[in-house]
Length: 265
Length: 190
Image (cartoon, rainbow over all chains, first blue to last red; front, side):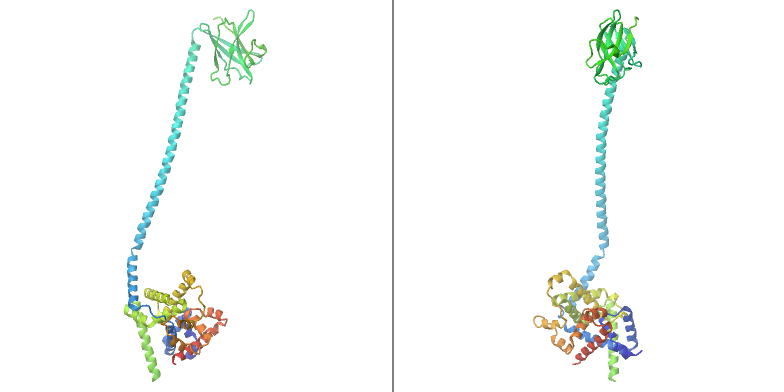
């Protein structure tokens, strides 16, 4: 290798400038170790740069002692900063715990809200059930009333059979002559059309004389379809006709739904 | 005989420097003090030419030496000269400062002249700058030399960057720089 040529290439000036690649730096360093001329050239180049850069110095603000103090405080800072990770760990744990606590609180609040809502709903349900029980009791009482009425020894039962208008219809009349009451069980009758009403007639057969006993009002909404009517007549038969709302003075025999004769017994 | 003496002195100096650096890397404060005495003015000078603010340059300079102390492990002589290593750290620190927002706000109207510009400015305020030596060193140096030296040594531009900046072939950077530095070395002997 031609050392002079190498020096003349200008690579050593760039080496001192610090702008060569790592590989080139290593190469220059190795050659400088082998060839004192190269080492010397590098030092002279560096000396010229040192001379030039020195002239631009603004002077040193303080002597080395001040820098030494800074190195010490830097070291102290490093020592102080050592337990930092632990401190961080602690604070992270603290924050994590706080977060868990907050989430837990929120969860419990949420649960509480749910439970309160459930309590309110349960109370409503309870009220409804109580209401149902009361209604059932009333209904049972009514049924028992009805049963006892029907079972009364003074009751005569008349079956009213379906007629031409509605052959499948039927009804029953439970007549307590002493109490002058008749109970019409109209379960076997169809619901009357709007604007019409069933009218119950007491019939005398010789001559045929119909007398109105009353209307089966609110037929559709009546629960057990048993209607109590007063009957002070010596009825020989009962008939039910469909009449315009409000009833009629005499029965419309074309709309006779059921008819039955009272047995003597 | 003269030549031999010269080489042996250089060799001793070189070995001394290597030992000094090794001691410094072992956190020997007195070794660091010697290195500081050798290079502090130069490092501060380079920083000053970049930031153009003496107080700020001194501040950064001290920070740079703290950094050098803390990073002593990362230097090996196979990577380059010790001075070159600290020169790089100093340039980077100064350039970081120049690029910072606060600096830009403060120095909006800074002219983009060469380090020789410090000479002109120095007439007014900067008493510490060695104007006479600088004048002597750059005497007869062409503007294109001063430009190039500023780019490569003070600003740390790569060959490619300098070539693009000056609009010359990349090979020319190397040879022109060689001749510029030669002139500088000649001026040193004056």
